[in-house]
Image 1 (cartoon, rainbow, N blue to C red):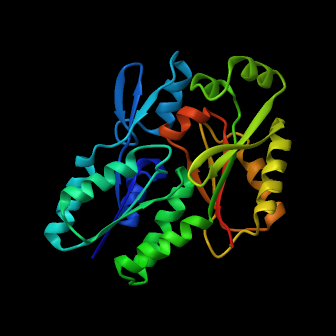
Image 2: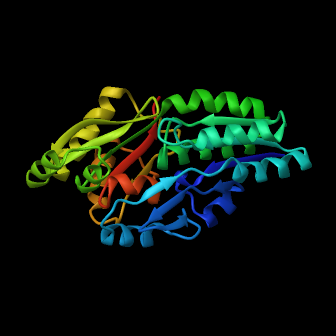
Amino acid sequence: MIKIITDSTSDIDVTYAKELNIDIVPLKVIIDGKEYKDRVDLQPDQFYSLLEKSEVLPTTSQPSPQEFLNYYEEAKEKGDSVIVMTLSGTISGTYQSANIAKDLAEYENIYVIDSLNATQALRLLVLKAVALREEGKDAETIFNELQAYKERVRIVAFVDTLEYLCKGGRMSKTVAAAGTLLKVKPIIGLRDGKLEMFSKARGTVKATAKIIELIHEDGEIDFKEPICIGYTGNDEGLEKFEQALRDEFKFEDVLHGFVGPVIGTHAGPGARLIAYVKK
């Protein structure tokens, strides 16, 4: 049997994880001195309510190696193989924790993948792993296919407010204040595992148009693979964002995802994203 493990930044909730037959290792979120396990003690809607009231930006921390080791030892006992997919190693030490645990487990059949991604893009990688397992492929084959697949996974988003990027020290107060007045929406995404600002636009309509332009520049979407539309805070206005993308790219089925605390801390409420796989 193959055990699939990911971390809570994949934004897969407990019920969904059971349906997929996967395990989730939670990251931790510290708000006003209190520590919560992501999606265990703290659900996304509760988090955004606390975030808006908090004077200081919440902090996040990676799982300990022991949290991964517990799953590895269970798999070792049963003789199961393990596939692990984590949040990008440049954003968090979660990938490192998963690898330290692998060394401690002294078990060959553990394959750890740095997804180079986060949130709904990590979720797409997990869904691919589940699909490959259902096809009856062995762990090593799945690992190799996922290593190639992750290079095609894309995520691009616009951030609604500059407040949280400013609080997190990723933008100066002066720039944030000017940007807020002009209704500037930074367009962000992950490139080679690093969070980057790709562009910026004034207002949500122009930001959505810029995202469409960036997708075209990068190449075509692979419609045989899932597409996910995600959001932070609330889904107000999400339909317009989704419809603009549907009108342009003519896709039909789409997944929806609520971005959790770890990524939501830096994006703040009101962000909109698309995660997809490039041809």
